[in-house]
Each structure stands twice: as C-alpha cells, then as structure tokens.
Image (cartoon, rainbow, N blue to C red):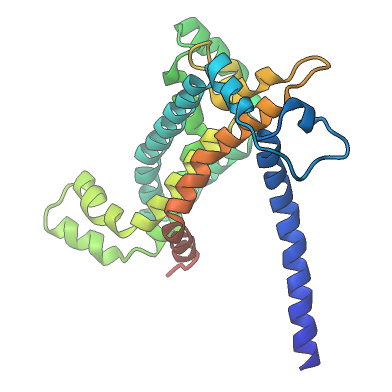
Length: 271
C-alpha cells in the first residue's frame, strides 16, 4: 500500500515536471503576444496585465503576414498531398513485396541534413527559372513528407490481410483500383496520421523556404524572422507571429485528436 502510494506520488511529480517543461514556454509565448512592448521588456515580468491586440495589428497591417500564412498553407497542404500520392503506393509496394531497402532509402533522405540537398536544388531550380515559386517549395518539402507517409503507413499495410488484395486480383481489379478501393479505405486511420504529421513537419520546416522562396512566396515561419534585427528584436510581434504559426497545426490536431491517437495505437499493432 505504501509502495503503491509512493509510486503514484512519484508519477505525479514526473508528470508535473514534464508538463511544466512543455507548457510553460508555450504559455509564456501566448502571454507575451498580448503584452505591449514595454510590458514585454519589463523586469521582473508581469503576470497580470491588460491584454492588447497591438502586436497582432502590427503583424497583419504592416507586414502582410496574412499572405505569408496563406503561402505556408499552400506549401504544407501541397507537399502533404504530393507525399500521400507518391508515398502511399510506394509503401504498399514495399509492404506487399517484403522489401526493406526502398523504405530505408527514404529514411536516410529524411535524416540527412537539409543543406545536403539545398545547394544542388538551388543551382538546378535557378537554371530552370523556378526559384521563388510555390511549385519548388511544394516539391522540395515532399522530401520531408514522403518518408513520413511511407513509414507511418508501413505498419498498417503489413497488418493488411493479403487475402483482400488477392480476392480483388481474382475479380479482375486493376492495381490502381486495388490501391484506391481496397487498400486505402482499410488503412484510412494511417492516412489520417500520415497527413497530420506531414502537414505539421512541412509547416514548421524553415531551411528550404528560407533559400528557395521569393518575396511573394515567403512562408510565415521565414517571415517571422523579419522581427529580429541587429541589436533590436520586436519580441511582441515575434511572439504574435509564433502564436499565428502555432494555431493551424494545433487546431487541426485538436479537431481530429481521437482519430490521431487511435491511428497511432492501431499502427503500433502489427499482425
């Protein structure tokens, strides 16, 4: 009884520490976004203050941050769709034929530093006149989303009964029909998980958009660094930008969190 109570206390302390480490910076960012410049720089910090929207007004009225946010949505959504279109058939082929090296290659591509791809891409797309377009950003961000889709879907596809596919083949279904009408509906939870993770990873990725975007295609996470200058940083506007950048993935995750958790749990069970 004593050991059980001590264990519960220990678990509670651990949970409190972890939540504090994760939640305090997020809460502090949200608080700073609603403070004036004077209150942001105040020492000691003020926990009680009159909230203001001046940082958000400055963000959207003086910096065209809405366009940058739309650019981020276009790039993240486009690269997610491209990753699903390319990654789902690839994951099915890897699973069906019991291959491992294609999945390993995609994993290496994801683990490699972005600078490894950046210079060749910059030279190639510059010669093609495509630097600064949404197309280039979507295509390069697919290098992030494609491995995520492949590795998230593999456990679901490995658990798929092979009889379903074989029955469809006997009935004369084409490969694309089998994939679209038989396989994908069964692994729909995995598609949800892969879509969310791909969107979040692409949304938050900085390097490719920093170098390959143009004035009109700059993403929100790149544009937020406009508030950091030499010796002077507009912390209020920067925190407001951070809040805006954090909202779409947060809202998306909250809306479908049950399917996300269920999909992750289902993907952890093989066989």
